[in-house]
Length: 421
Image: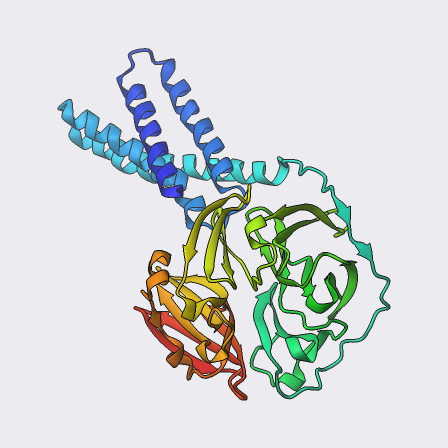
């Protein structure tokens, strides 16, 4: 999208530069170039606001003005000007090296200052506020388990690694993923079979599945503190995801067809339940997870179908039936141009069918059009959630002692995997 806008901006500057060259009214020349400057300032500000790490943020104005300058050179050469040497010295050297650079630097500086001082006020967060928890400050304490019991997720949030140890009723964390489990610290052991955690760098939201609540944690010195909770959110909350595009947390109720949408108040980090969406077709169906892809959300349901809904309205856009042998799905992930599906059981609940399959088109899942890739991870266990961080993918699985967490990469379709726990 940024490249498209860059191309369009280059066209606008080409038109303005050619117009400034052709006009016989000298007073219009500075006006046309000033119009180009102000146009580019507004473009850089609105396109790259909040994404200054983009390489194009620094090059956008320079490239666009270079296009305009080159267009002038070509235009004047086509007019067969007599002094081509003077033209190339003036526009090819002086303008390109000095004027275009100054224009681009000016645009960049003004755009940056506008970003800093022109703030779009965020609407106040409204909804049902969390219950505050007055937990006393605790010193960080180490995990006492040297193994994992049904791990369900490993992730990295704001530089910290989190591992959900479901059947040990805890979430542990570490700044170094390579440390032994007994050197990880305990975020909480006051939950019952939680499955996931998500965060925006300020607050960290975890599902407490069997207690039907959501727990909120905040950093406190070198550790964390349990500060807020939402009780009685529905039967078995099972998956939470932070969506950066909407600055919202999504929390899925695994058997109720409900998705809670929560936001954090920037003033005091208080969490608010702002909306609850309901998908009638999934009420009473066991759905372990969901995946946000652009403006759509995918639900791999336990009744043998994948539902695709609109992220805003939650209206069903598409239903993908799957073969009965992979009906007990866990999670859908997109890696490169392929969909990866972790499977716990077949449609009737036999764990012998646990596997990982992948395909390019979800339509093919109904008639067995997939590739089974579980052998890349030895196989024989139950794969669960796949996550991505540190330039790699991570898989947690259970039923296989010594093979609970995998790190893997995919290049040209080939999976290279290694066990880390």
